[in-house]
Amino acid sequence: MLNHAFTKHLEDILSEKVETVKPVSGGDISKAYRIATSYSNYFLKLNGADKFNMFKTEAYGLELIAKTNTVKTPRVLAFDVFENSAFLLMDFIDSKSALPKDFITLGEQLGALHQNTSKCFGLDKNNYIGSLNQSNNKHLNWDDFFIEERLLPQLILANSKGLLNSKETPSINTMKGALKPLFENIQPSLLHGDLWSGNYLIGLDGTPYLIDLAIYYGHNEVDIAMTKLFGGFSNDFYKAYYNILPPDTPTNQRIDIYQLYYLLVHLNLFGRSYYGSVISVLKKHF
Image (cartoon, rainbow, N blue to C red):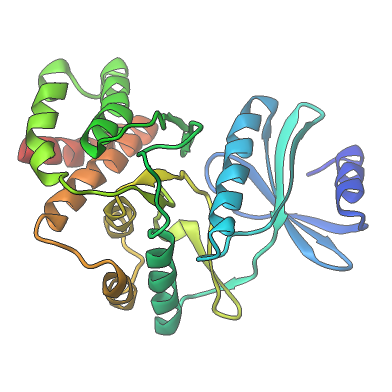
């Protein structure tokens, strides 16, 4: 629980008196609290001071997506370090289970978000996927970006952890030879970057919100691939989304490959239980 000094620091930021502080489930990485004042409710993420950059880049992502005026994100109120703890303070979003019409809205708004483009793939700063570093060095070509900034770092990490061996790891040339024909005529879209069912909320009025971002400019199908990896999105969502950005012939192949990135992340975060899924995709495509 928060000590008196930390609570007073939050009151100074909010200019409101804190009435209650209650722990809530906030993921595997940080502690999370619901901060109630007489005026409103706020969401606090708390971690060690060494995680300040993680909160800084999360705040940057939330604000960047908010500026597109396509899909909402919780308003960021502060991110800082206090008493050796890094924190991120946002509005608390009271949420409900998604109805079919809410999934339609989410699909339409994600399609609108993905129409925000850039000259390059990547981002002007690196960020995180879960607790792992995510490199966003800019590239003009999607195959260069996806292989060098997404697959390769995770493959190297898996090798260093003894989760994959060198014979199981394709070379850069092998990956480029296999992926280049599938990655033609792809334009950069602003992505959520980690869009599984735990990383969106539906407000009580049906408004979708995106949370826990890993943003960058990449192929729009990367977000769709993650929505399909662990379930939680309805057919209404996909129908609404594809009305805006329709799939093409290689879409299913690409989704399989994009899911490999997330499977490698899970392999590196959670261990051997994801090994079979990773090897299956590697053998299929490389």
